[in-house]
Image (cartoon, rainbow, N blue to C red):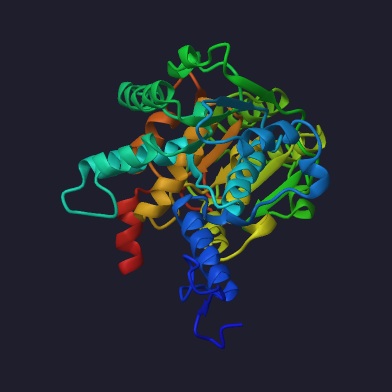
Length: 419
């Protein structure tokens, strides 16, 4: 209509208030709307979830119908929603649908995994130089957002500082009538000191059972076929060749086998290379898979590589999808923890994953040949917490080389790689 000019002149009779005026052409309005939607998407912090949408049939079924209705309400209508459901029930997907639904309508929405928000606030508070947001600006940005979604609210480390900041944030939003969605596994937030916010006027939606999908996933080559070959019966508890090199393999085997029958909390196997830690971990994973659990066996360096690569993907392979499955799977095996390159990103992601499972006491089996004091202190404190798990030192000769197995520190590994 405009011949590429972007504007058209309004045809009005002389004397009309709009006579001679120009207005944006339809093509320009579409461009402006697209730019506005892109800006809202960028500010939403949805990341890989920015394309997550429910199908029409899914959105038309309860409780998605009620959640979508909540998202559609006007911003000047005060309202809070608690969205709860067990692992794998789709609560993150529904939260993303609510945010994307608003953005499609030209309205803002802000999404945060609560642990990530606290990490960013902590980093902004400790920053010595300027960044995208100072602490004050970031806190104000989240505090005053017209529509805020806080995901995995009950998976934070409930320190005094975290409780204080969340209380300040939610108390301000409650008093100012800001629309807020809280997403958690349970409707009981007393463990993190926020139960007082769940008053009678907070709408509640509880999702049903976890979605049924593939029960086994691996990172690093432990396919289901390979896993099936690892059993407790095939484990050589007598050590290499039965010549008595095993110091405590029978006890380690008995411990892991007993734990795998009714897994709870964490089990960490520490020992040198080749002593059978991976065999025992795989046997436990095999037993739980046979029992019907959802299991993931991840070699830590390979897992981190997959997570990095997933930033470029979407759908089932997306970072958020992988990370959510790791947090929610019935049994997670982290094999060879400490063999990865200890970058700031890797340490942070491992901490977030482990912190989530630690707080929920989700069964997690870890193998490492790194001394605990050489690991990230945040991980080491959780591994060594006798209230949440058990640490077993596995002592034997290397099955493969018939040499004395060594537990090595990260420092020694680095020097060996340089050599």
